[in-house]
Length: 119
Image 1 (cartoon, rainbow, N blue to C red):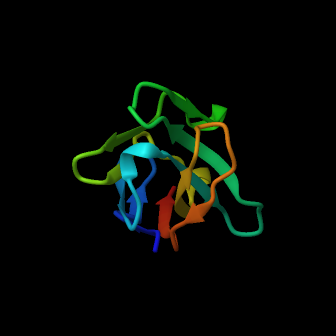
Image 2: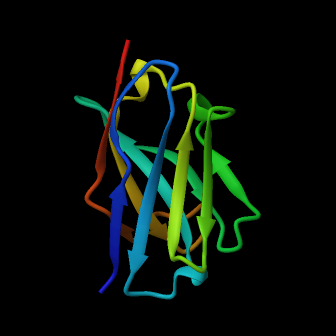
């Protein structure tokens, strides 16, 4: 079955960096777009970034443009989210997702990894 396992979350000071990883299994990784969503306490889950099957096309929510970079390694069945210049408002649980295309609704979700940014 489809499995998406996130890692790399933690506690970091504002201005710092973290790299999240998503290890995928149970499907042909290179045939699916991948994404990241997040949910902050008391808020709805929101889209963060997505990447196409080849990695050529990426998209980001406006609040993370220029600070976050999504990437993937199809040989390792892994996607990544490099987060730089972190802000306290980036604090959330981050979820890895699988989707058919970068613009479509995810059909699989990981369990999430906590990212906490202290001021």
